[in-house]
Length: 300
Image 1 (cartoon, one colour):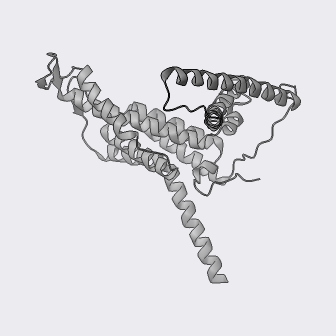
Image 2: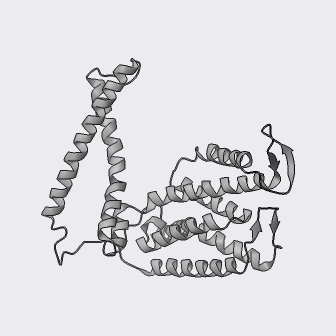
């Protein structure tokens, strides 16, 4: 049986091992490669992939602005002093540069984690780590599944309370607090009942018994092998280039960077290939689908 491929995201239909390794690599490189070109590649690639997943990007500008402004105000290291703040501390060019870099890095990592949540579902996580760390993988998958269910149930309870005349807005603080405590009590009761039902269901399905097997729809096919080979090549090249100083950039005590060479250009190109891998796979799948459709229509 082949993997179930999403029409919206071809990469999400790959084997869970490919999905997990990709996000582990891009998140790690996004945090470690502080060269401005690398940060720009990671941020733009994450934004494109998040937009394809229809993720909201409205939080990016406030997050980047806050990070970029706070660093020069709190960090005063650097040799190039531009002016002095009212507190008497210097405002340095290096702190501004590092603030911009930190803002780009933080935004890219947050976006990659957002894309990770859209691709790596709880069943994929359990499939990968269920036999290695069964208890931890079960707890993590149940926790990730419980949070959205808790939010959805809370909305249902609020609507029910509003329907019986217990509004949560436009009343005194005491009434709002009393109604909030009642909703919280209802949610705690629901959570306990849900936990008991889950435990009974797991016990009835034989969870924890020796020799118990698990059904899985994930199989490693040719596309997954090619994707894994691409990840292996990109990660090996980037690790080697990183160790050789291909992405050297220094912010403190003064801004310093290596010369732009063919080697550094190839380093950035491979990093771009890695970060755009989901988008490129989706584009290749769409082109293949259009060619197949055109061939079918011509034969008809």
